[in-house]
Image (cartoon, rainbow over all chains, first blue to last red; front, top):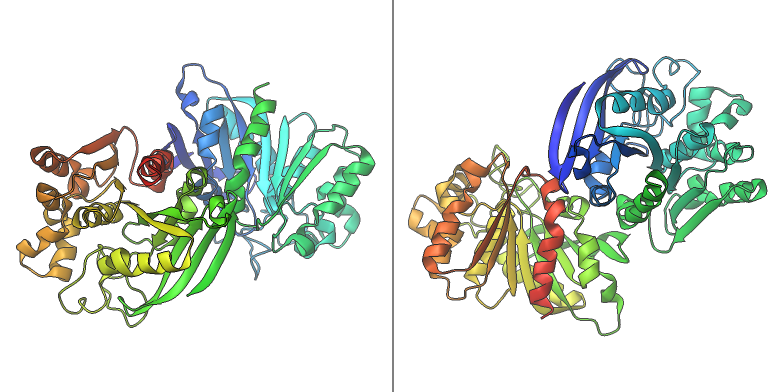
Length: 278
Length: 278
């Protein structure tokens, strides 16, 4: 593991590391924000994992969201991985919504993706193990994300009861089996059997989630992808039917960009801090 | 003038406009943040002009600095222009530190730059006239910037007594006549006569500034350009000799990046708010 960026930020450090991922079989970057509290002797801080959207790397969130101010205030480490395996040997596809930059937080089963596109295992297992071995963190974990990464956050939390203390999402793809982005990616990564897709779809998972971890979602009402790709009302209906607590806030005027995330990231970090520091 | 971006941000709007600049003879973009207070009937808000550094466009500050949160809190409009004329017909040079992206906030007198590289006149005259004609702003102005843009902010404020109510800078080039970046740019834009450079050098201007507008500078102590290109002690000595008020804060650990700006932009906006809203 090699540190490739190191910037003072709000009294702490915004770092980027590079490592060889055994899960993905390639070199991966991930970002770590260490708040000032991390420098205290014996510190063991909780960790928020942030999952980014289509086309993103580990850079987008750390340069644009302004999360460090609030992570520093609450004493939370924030880890932001890349969104797919990387490198010349990794399969790719035309278009921004499949292949590199579009791992969709699943474990692919279909050729040519199955070998490398295991970003779910990477985010749930390999990365936390690495983070917990090398940084002054506890095993108190939270997960959040944007768009494709909001889908990742919701499905990862729903699939792993007890592993995350809180979950939230901005503008998530809540029902990938029912929207074009998800149908394209799932058909490629998981094959034509739609039954197999249900294990990776928050709107399906919420129907039988054994742990009723409250879901917090912020959604821009003027998001250009709202009606075709995001459709939060599908998750809202499923959660209501299942008695699963969900807070869905529609924010008038806001779009799908990081300007939206930056405007409300303080509330999400406060939400996670309440669970992580309880 | 055409609006080319429009994003809700902290209850206001982060917009980008495109217009034909008569000063520069080319199409220019500039960014405008309108805080929520701008929507009130009859609003006339003060304006902070932000000048960016080498290689930047109007995008860097608006995506990375997190200033909108604080501009919204204080009710200040923030205008961020590009850093040079643009377009295929505009002269350019090899290297990031001359030509496009490197206008240095001067009016060039030498060929081939003289005709187009008049970014000083653009920032001081054309852009404020445009902004004051089209947006709900008053004539209360402040100016700030980073690196080359910090040089721009300091020199523009010092050259125009009464025109700006406050000035600040992050990691500014304070003595361009004495450092490689400035010597290269000034030799090209202004010619070999170093006497002519003095009118564009904050360390020279402060010696005889008729208005003692306090200068606020934040500088990262671990900035990779500190010793060779920035040398704030040169301005500090000149200001002290002239009795010109200067607050220079060295920030341990911080580098030249936007992570530094984001960490302290709240204090700069509060500084400007005190002057603009007094």
